[in-house]
Every structure is written in structure tokens, then in C-alpha cells.
Amino acid sequence: MRKTGLLRAWGRILAGRSPNLSIEITRECPLRCPGCYAYEPEHLGTAGPLRTLADYSGGELIDRVLDLVHRHDPVHLSIVGGEPLVRFRELQTLLPLLSGMGVSVQLVTSAVRIIPPGWIADLVGGNTLWANFFASVVGAFMYFATLTEVPIIQGLLGSGMGKGPALALLLAGPALSLPNMLVIRGVIGTQKTVVYVALVVVMATISGYLYASLFP
Ligand code: SF4
Image (cartoon, rainbow, N blue to C red; front, side):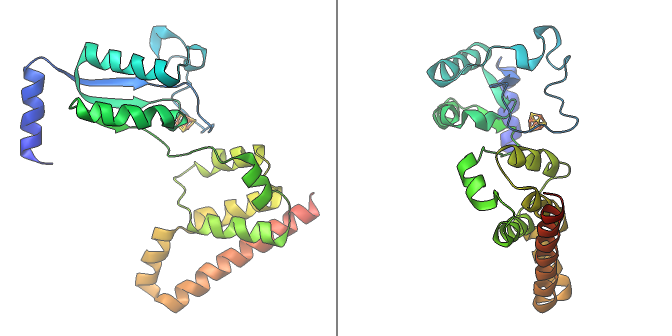
């Protein structure tokens, strides 16, 4: 942390600015994480559950956020949800404006964006070997934070993913990720890492394919 930044922030607070403001810019989220705090009935206190509140979008959301920022004049602003990236178009306008106002912005996001269902059905919609292989490769390279694989796969199944590719992704995902491969390569070398990755992908592909063939 830079000392000058800290002193500047304290200077602004002593000059009368609010230290922090948190705005839930949307009640929507494409995920359903186990243990999610945002949809707990008491999360917003007397305001009521998040899902019952009004959800703004477009110019109205931008104007309302800017109005709150002008009124409270925070040094630091947390933008949360639901999933704030659901309102990515509005954020494209808001973030440069907030930066120009000298507000430090933190975007609290799972970085999940909805994939068009047509893409999912085309790539992993059936139970072909290709669909299972594709899901295994994506799972092997993708990084899943703990427990997020469950709601992510639930969402993909709801958008048309086949049962076999879902299992393949669920097996390869937690077993590997790109950062994980780089670390393993540093320990056991390139050749053994390639064999290890190939085994995970092949076994996940076969498992997914067999599972959906036996339990269609
Ligand atoms: S991403 Fe966040 S808001 Fe969405 S379900 Fe998970 S914890 Fe809740």
C-alpha cells in the first residue's frame, strides 16, 4: 500500500467526505450459490429481501447511482448485487464517470456473464464424444473457485447442456486449471504434466460419455 494514497484518503475523510458507500445496483444474479448471503431475508435489514426491491436499468440506474454518489460523496464505492455485471452496459458508462469524480471503485463480482443458450446447445448440448471432450478441455483450463462449480453447472444445465458434458466438466474442473498446470509443470516437468492433463481430460470425457449413455 502506498503511504501517499493512504494520507490522501485520510485527508479527504477529514475534509468531510464519507469513507465508504456500498450500492447494490441489481437484484439479479445468474448463479444460485449455496450459502449466498445476498438473498438472505435479513441481508438488507428493514428494506426487505433483495428480490422484492425495484431493479433499475439503463439511464435511470446511471442517474440514480450518480445521484447517490453526489449526495454521500464517498472516497470509496463498492458496487455489488446480485451480480453487478448483469448491468455491464450501465457500468461501461458509470465506471469512467466515477473515476473522473475521484471515487475509488471496487466491483464485487463473480465475473460470471450469461452465455447465450444457443452457444451452449451447439457446443455441449448432446452427448457426443466431441461435446464431452470439449467440456473436459474447458473444465481443465478453467479456474473454479470453491463451490462455484455447482451453481455454474446448474446454470449451464438449465441453458441446455447435456448430462454427460456436465459430468465431464464437473470432473475435469476441480482437478485442473491453467495456473494449477503451470505449478505442476514446475514440479514434475513438461512431459509428465502433459500426460497428467491428457489423462484427466480423457478420463473425464469417457466418464461423461458413459454416464449419459447409461442414464440418458
Ligand atoms: S454470485 Fe454472489 S449474489 Fe450470486 S448467488 Fe453467488 S453469492 Fe449470491
